[in-house]
Length: 55
Image (cartoon, rainbow, N blue to C red; front, side, top):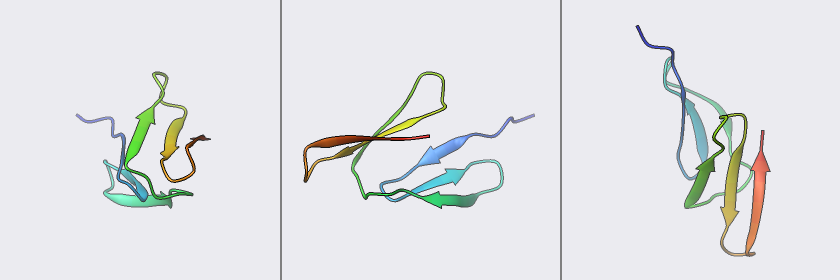
């Protein structure tokens, strides 16, 4: 039995259970960090030298 999950690419989030794309990321990035509690995703905007948090 799988509980599903979320995976991320540089441009989208993916639902691993249904293999769908629930949303696009607000910025394209090569560095993504899932928060330990999995309620937030931190994106690194290398061009502007900023971090953005997505809930």
